[in-house]
Image (cartoon, rainbow, N blue to C red; front, side, top):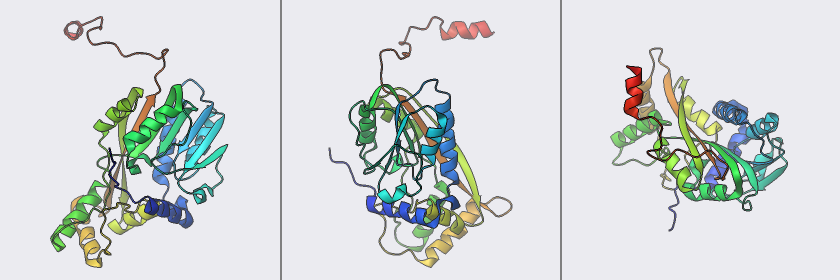
Length: 294
């Protein structure tokens, strides 16, 4: 089945290169938070992973945390452009690959970590299947991606302003996966024991324009193939900023921006893994359990 092309991969690459050239430390707060959370989740796993891969993690931050964890011997960093390796992060290997590709042999790896990039894959189910194939039995995937609700305030403000000022609206904020769908994607890709949860981080800004500057510095400018090629007017952004302030400002006048991050984990099936109980195999019924509490 032909996969619909949603994202302009050339623009995604250019967005990231421009952000790196500007100095990623200016707006890497979200990546730092997410990388730290992934490191904490890895830290509670009581085993080592000899060969690991960091998949399209923007900067070398995830590689550094993997190295510091002491849980892996080899780390291969994967990015879409060789210029993204400029920060010389700790990695034993470097691979250039498209966002939808995972160029590893079957059962080559024991750990794959991805931070804030999987949402940009046109074929996320296919990418997850490739990752599952590359993991050896009892290998682990840890990933984080923006989910539904991310930048919802910005989406609403731009859509309302454009609808008000013109006859239609162009997509200006990319679609994000619903947390309820992510567990199913992991299972269909062949992962066992999938765990999916989300955390919403609220960031406050003086104006919508300060938020948009941060998004550019994160390399997160609109990469949709279906975006309008006509430059947006100053009137559109001015009206959107007014709507944003009217609907999403706190008492002190600063606006809120939501980043809803979905965290995923899944294991390559292995005969020695813990198995979920079969329906009807519980040793106590729900009725008995409730009666015991009364």
